[in-house]
Amino acid sequence: MTDSSDTSKGQPSFAEAALFGLCPRCGGRTLFIGPVKFADRCRACGLDYGKFNVGDGPAAFLTLGIGALVVILAVWLELAVEPPFWVHIVLWLPLVVLGTLGGLRLAKGALLVREYTARAEEHRHDGSDLS
Image (cartoon, rainbow, N blue to C red):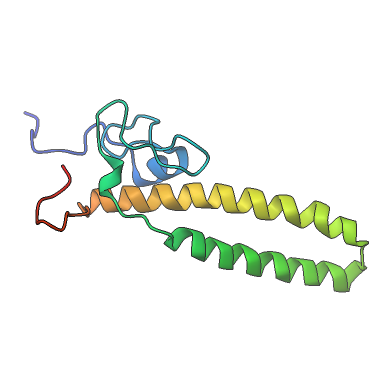
C-alpha cells in the first residue's frame, strides 16, 4: 500500500533543481527565462515564482567571494611571474563574468528551491497571500 501523503514524489532533489533550473514542484526546466532572470511562473505546473523573495543576497555574496578570489589569484600571479597586463585581462575577465553568472544562477535557484521546500512565501500587506 502506498502512502498518499508523500508530496515529494516527482519533485527534483535540491541539488538537481538548483543546478539545472528545475521547478521545485514538478521538475520542469522552467525556473529561468534568461541567464539569471526567473520566469514569472512554471509553464508546466503553474507555480508562481513571484511568491518567493530571493532578493539580492546571492549577488552580493558572489561579488565579494569571486572578487576576493580573483584579487588573490591576480596578486599571486603578478608576484610569481610578472606577466604583461593583457594576460591579467585575458585570464580574469572571463573568470569574473562566467563565475558570477554561473554562480548567480546556481545561488538564486538554490535559494528559491530552499524557500519552496521551507514553504516560505511572500504575503500581501492586506493579509492575504499571493496564491
